Amino acid sequence: MKTIEISNWLTETTATLTRVGIATARLDALVLLEDCLHKDRALLLAHPEIQLTDEQISVLRQRVQRRMAHEPLAYIRGRTEFYGREFTINKNVLEPRPESETMIDLLKTLPNDAHNLIVDVGTGSGALAITAKCELRHNPVMAIDIDPACLVVGAQNARIHDVDVVFRTGNLLEPLADNTKPILALLCNLPYVPDGFHINQAAGHEPKLAIFGGPDGLDLYRQLFSQLPGLAQQPSYILTESLPNQHAALALIAAAGGYHLVITDDFILLFKAG
Image: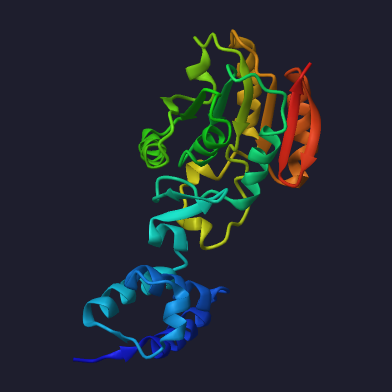
């Protein structure tokens, strides 16, 4: 039976991941080790003499091989963090990005009536919808996605965080056609990467449906703003995420739909009706 101390495993694995271009090689190795041994990294680093079992070595080998193929660490772990909370994810959903947290920061600054609806359009893992509900407990929240597999993940995360979010399947705003509640805001992190854009190897493991948005990346936003006249209740605000070099074009799309730009914060734009 071959044994290996965790210090040696960390050194070897860091070198292996570095050779294939993983910039966060040592950190990733530590995270995988924490998950496998169910121990905090401070304890592991304080006890480098701990021996890995055959079973642990086998599990770690499989996970390292997946990371060597540039599969995102979050998919290997089956979870990620967003706005200080942990969310389950799988290959059916996009990994929530830190820049999307700004959408929640801006949402919390809006004039708010607790009866007004918050809608997460293109919810994926449900991270935005669930975080909105956690932060604004009295507002009703709806999460929409065209892919039922995403809504399964979202509903699971809602149960984990013990929040009441309504999940609806549909294309963008279609599930809001019969809504009668005033809408405070739409949270729209729609696919915005232009079709011809070269994505990195990690993003190549994520669902293409959640990444690419047409020749200039804004097709889904055009469709969303074109659907607004069909709603009985118009949103007071719309928050979007897109590349900074798309902001001017997106502001024109929004203006044609009756919304003017109020705030630009990195990837996030805040539009107001009127």
